Amino acid sequence: MFGQLGPTPYDLRFGLFGIPVRVHPVFWLTAAFIAWIPDRPDLTLVGMAVVFVSVLVHELGHAVTTRAFGWYPEISLEFFGGYATTTRHSTGKDIAVLAAGPGAGFLLYAAVYAFREVAVRQGWVWNEYVGVAVYFALWANLVWNVLNLFPIYPLDGGQIVRLLAIHNSPRNGLRTSQMISIGVAGAVAIYAAVCAARDVPAFNFGDFSLNLEPRMLAIFFALFCFQGIQEYQATRRGYWR
View 1 (tube, rainbow, N blue to C red):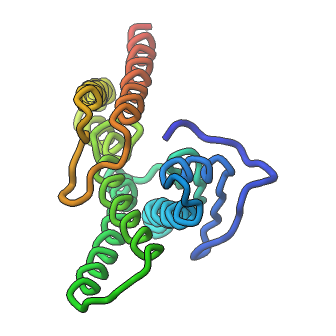
View 2: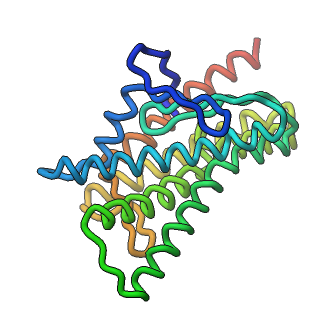
């Protein structure tokens, strides 16, 4: 999402379904930031584990679909997410690869949600560790994947819009997708900043408020907007040469 980090001697490496996975140390720092529960390092570790699984499932969606199209991907987890390597397919297959990440996350959300509903109806009693794990699993796999489908580059939604725009207009599609990305990112950043000023949640998904500080959300999307403007300016310079 924010660039790629090179390998280090401290990376966690393993294989899953024949797909190499690399976890950069900075991933654990950002996972701790997301899952931080003051004065409860044990619950924070539970939240970090759920964040790890959720991000991994998302990237596995991309990677498994890429693998189905004959390419051998790798997964890297870094910063607040990660990426799965891929190659250029047809527009339809590229969109399928991009959509498979959020799709896998939504499937995991549905499974955990169904488990919670059954548990409630059956009157099961669980300890606070299970409760924290269920909460983070529901939150991460709903909220993250919804946001990831926003038409903002380099989110999956933004990449899908870019592919469709270029497919429909090879000459002007890239700039059209850039303008959409800049506009939506700027609008979300402003909206989140207003919510921060009013001290209210930026988004609300039923019983799951977006558990990100609105100020932090405003910063992230302002960065996406700024990156989009830089890319658009570079594209314009290249176009007029």
